[in-house]
Length: 422
Image (cartoon, rainbow, N blue to C red; front, side):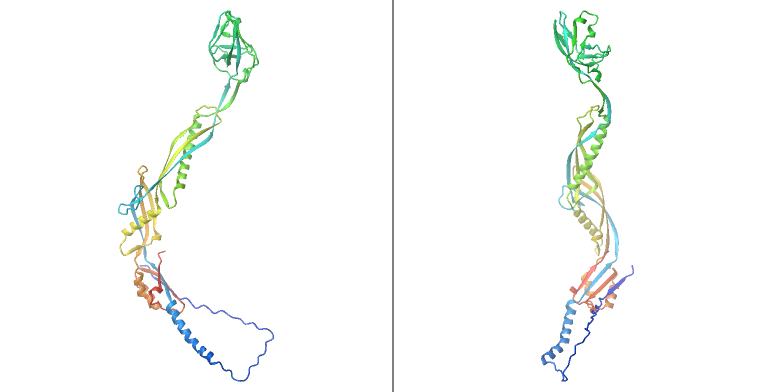
């Protein structure tokens, strides 16, 4: 058993204030008559009553104001306990016999939208476009199939028709065209670049070369061809889409989970892995190879948590400890430490099993009433001896008040006993 320490202190009487007298340089002179001074009879009686009044007042103060303040440190022992506990949203109250406490499922759904930059580059060729008025001076109508090639006098400059056209005999018709390749076997192949933005020109039809129609059927443009260009442009790659989806997915999960945490009221707690979050959908209208500098992805995420009241967990723990310690023992509630890990989570049923570890200080129960009765009326030395003989106590401190009191009051209400476990 640890060595006992008894600290008994009695407040000391405060020192009287020091009073200093100050005199002027010239002291006044007083003359006292030589005849004997006599006090009035009534004043004399009052002076003789003063000691009696003080004695009575002191006696009353002794019995009415005296008290003993006693602090006790019992011998303590740290105990640990382990158990399983189930949190269940389907119950409303703690079930101590079944190791169940009520649970609450909180849920949060959020939508997200984020813009991303494209990283790809590609060479973009845009065809020059315009109209050619086709003349048919032949005596029969002429059918021009789609992609019929019209050749400019400028070397390497050709345009192709966008649609099938029938030119009546001895007539003319406007045909929509775009810049294309002049090489044989490349029918309709688009060619881009500013060099195709040519001024109004005459056009021949290479497909009619070697026939009588070659000079009878031809074309003329009245306006310049426009829109031809060749430049580097941004491009959305598949890697861009994959990277953006990963970033947005992580953001959606985190922010939805954080929003759910903010939604849980004070007094509720969630086990470390008591959260569940998932991305319900993620989408984009952009396809790989799209000519875009920026693109947007959208996502929808859902988060859930099985929560329980800290108060319920604490009440269960205290009840569990009380059922596991001997009847002559008590535990210090302030020293209670709780640690738990979650197991077997079922979000659909709203259930989670906790592995609960408890640590607390226990000590022998002390009957304060019996202790007060044993101390009542004892002197300082008797009090010291009495407390030393209590096996469950390792340290005490006794204070009497007022300063002249040297015994524990007989009145039990004047004895204050405070238990210290720290």
